[in-house]
Every structure is written in C-alpha cells, then in structure tokens.
Length: 219
Image (cartoon, rainbow, N blue to C red):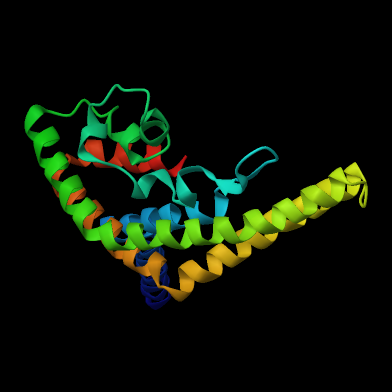
C-alpha cells in the first residue's frame, strides 16, 4: 500500500511539474502590445540604414530619396485617404499602407488623423534638422563627385575606376550621414515620437485590427 501511495505521489509531482512548465512556456510565447510597439519602432528606425544612395552624373551627384528620411517619418494626415501621385511613394512605403487595409470606421479615421497631426508636431524639429544635415552633406559630396567626374572626362581614370570611386563615395556618404544623425540624437527623438503614435494607434484600433496592422508592418 505504501508503495502505491509513493507511486501516486511521484505521479502527482510529475504532473504538476509538467503543468507548470507548460504554463511557463505559454507565458513566454505571449507578446505584449508594449513589446510589439517597441519592435515596430525599432523596425521603423532601421529604415534609415536601408535608404538607397544614388548617383547622378548630370546634376545631383550623390543623393538619396526624400532627403534620406524613411517614409514612416514623413507621413501627413492627408495620406490616410490621399490619392495624389505626388505622395504615393510615402503612402505605399510607410505604415499608412497597412492602415488603409484595415476597413477603418469614420470615427477611427478621424482619431488616427488627429494622432498623425500630433505625431507630425512631435517629430517636426527632428525631421527639419535631418533634412538640413542631409542637404549640407549633399553639397559637400557633390564637390567630391564632380572631381571624380572631371578625372574620368579628362582621361585620368578609366570608366571602371570611375565606377569604383563612385561606389566608395556612396558608401562614405551613407556612413557620414548616419554618424551625423546619431550625433544629433535624431534617431532617439524620432523613436520617441513614433512610439507615442503607436501607443495612441493601439488604443484606437480593435484587437483584430491591431494584430493585422502588426503583421502587415512586419513584412
């Protein structure tokens, strides 16, 4: 009888341990909205690192689209329902694209537009400074680009060497721009504003809509 009791006790302990372990596993797989917001904010900031650097032999020299600022930080309230071609790139490559597919109610649209206005005001100074830094750097690298172009035109360097030097110049431009942005703490300021906007957005959307938004934005 004692052996049976001991066996039952051991089985009970094993069952409890398994149940506790299962609960802990489930707890670790649950992602809070705060974690999701932080992850989306980090993803938005990485957009600075993925902006393409271009070169134009005729006019611009070394440059980036939208002054090197990712679309997520250039959104305006009109983009939520806008149809103009001028801002199509921003709508299609920012969080706006995900919002437009959520079947939002008129009340939600109004609240989101208000949130975007507050977001715009929050990031205004940082965006303005980012554009100024970019434009100053473009002028600096335009001179460097012209020197390489002149060397190619007068035959000092070959076409292959010209392409090689331009590629190096583009990489140098990206590194210096990134360094200046970090020095000015622009990324920190923009992250704060974007995180605040996402918190407001989470409160406006239904649970189903928020989940769909997160899944869309992560792609």
